[in-house]
Image 1 (cartoon, helix red, strand yellow):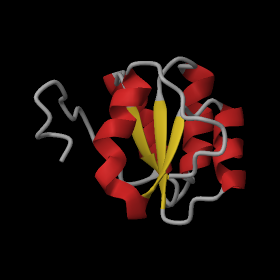
Image 2: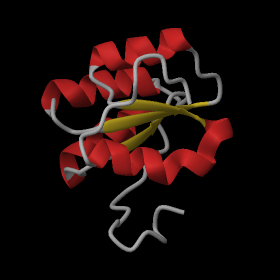
Image 3: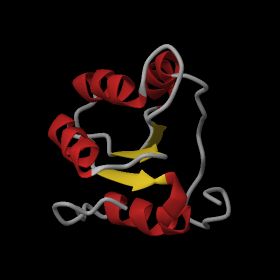
Image 4: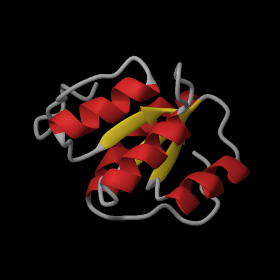
Length: 110
């Protein structure tokens, strides 16, 4: 789905949180789509490590079980947006919003 977007290029993929942190250093992506559930280091932990090194990189967190509490925690850490995996039809719109600097309204738990 992401590779089909004319203006985007997927520069890398990571199988776990540790690899995500390493790939961020190597690839310097313009956006990270991070899964919450990853081995070795959760998406939240990986995002924290990435944002310590690169505080301006936008991160969109994907999770199967999205809650208001998780969205708030993610926002407090600097993660720009959260999206439920059950709402993947909104992924492109969410990415466009994050890349344009738009923030989701408080309490938006898509």
